[in-house]
Image (cartoon, rainbow, N blue to C red; front, side, top):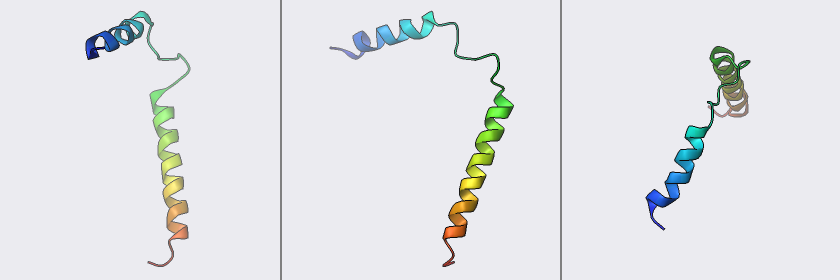
Length: 52
């Protein structure tokens, strides 16, 4: 099995869709939520690392 024969069905499947963007998903809300989640995790990790 070659790489081309493996990738061809995946390419045709990706082109058949109408895009993955949902109308209710805003990139700013998604990015802001991810930023807040990562900053919260950073704050939690620094609270546990008190030896510095």
